[in-house]
Length: 158
Image 1: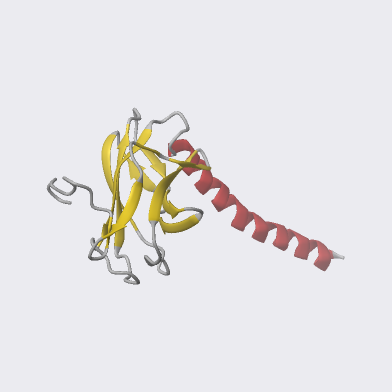
Image 2 (image 1 turned 90 degrees about the vertical axis):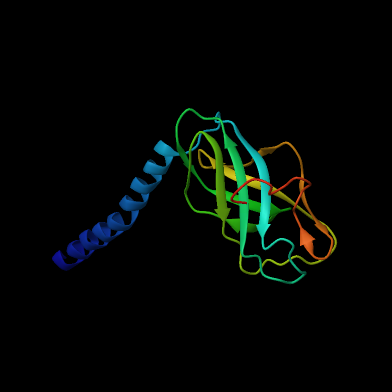
């Protein structure tokens, strides 16, 4: 009987060691996370390389976000084409003002087919929501696929 009780105690302690750290991590994320009332707007969405040939691997997505909050906050950013996630970050720290964020691509995603339009999604208080944007971000096929807009990347560091 003592062996059974001892096994139960050990199993309980093992379970607690797994659950407690994950609760603590989510509490930190919630305390510093972006909130639903925070105003976030996408200024620009780019890919690297640009242009990119059909079937070629994307090296990085670059998202330019205007964050109108009063404090820094942590969030997760996704780039989606329809319901498919094509790029995702883990815990990005945004400061008030313009933020340039590089988002790692999903390895298997490639430009193929006819039209590609993208949305950016942010985690606000544990809920993923589309981020407001002044325009649609659609890739156009020229010599390759491109998200470049007229006057785009005239800024230093782009």
